[in-house]
Length: 456
Image 1 (tube, rainbow, N blue to C red):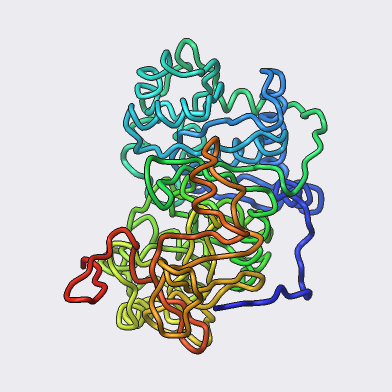
Image 2: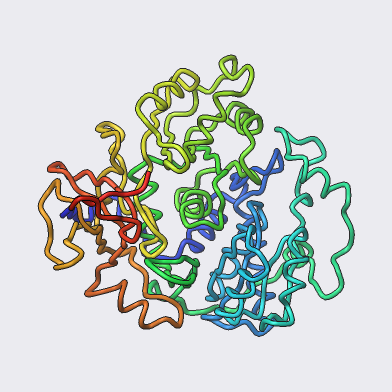
């Protein structure tokens, strides 16, 4: 079992992350919170915009604890909506922008959400399911609205096409940007750290997608862990290209910048040339990536001639391909001061970031050690007994990041959350030094000649 005690030194203020945003707006109002293809948004502007959206939600009758859906790719409006929803105590409910009609209808129906913030390009999907849901109000976001006239880096062609096709908000929708620009302040709401702040949908250990209820306290704990274990500083510039609607991209791209006061260079999606340009132009020091991104980036013509010396930290998630020591060394030839390593192990039900890799003691093939304050143990899935180092079994997690349960799914909650432990359904092992290795999903394991085997 990995058991890392919480550290008292540098303990974060016990307040919701949107209060950190308010603090930056007060202490550093002209500081840059976000850069969107060259367009800058200050802390004061992000704070005012999220305040205005919170106030508008209250006018619409949204109450504390109500779900509000977000159906968007990465964009500054996502940040404004996310923190606006939480400022008035409602629940952020991201819907994957790749969702098909039946998937969106299922999630909105499960939530009984009355309000959605949707990208204009995704409105046809919303329109097809609207009558079968509880939706009463649709805010529309145009990705291209905040693009500068002369972008600092390459802009995806689809965004440029959207700018060329700009038109008034469709009938039956409210213009999100016009709403936040109109201003407004929300009425004060009492928010406790144990209140639900986020609902992220996951298939969980089994079955249909379920809304994992995550609190303000969960978010603060795991955001602080991600920032502190990875050495993020207030004067850092971060590159945010992973999807914000996904729990990992949200922690790294929405939460960590607000927690630390660092500047986020936000991109709509991964584009190798655009990322290369952003890393150099903005002197990015910290980038959370997915391994195929690194592999694709190294194929950009002329990359060796770019100055990427500012990049010092690059936690990477192995997905699609594995981040090996060889791949990390290859990437270091382009970014000579950069440490690349496996980012973490985690899942939605624990607000992810259950482990981190000590940058000075990287162990390839593992996901690192439990973050301070988190416990990880390996158990025999049949007996529940804790297994010794090196033995393979089910990964279970206990700590301040653990969710409150699944939305309206008490039986599924009882199966996954037991005595404070999240039973992940993942198989893994812990070595004698406390490094966790994720092996595979328990339900994918097959028995061959008495041995436990996972498909390639």
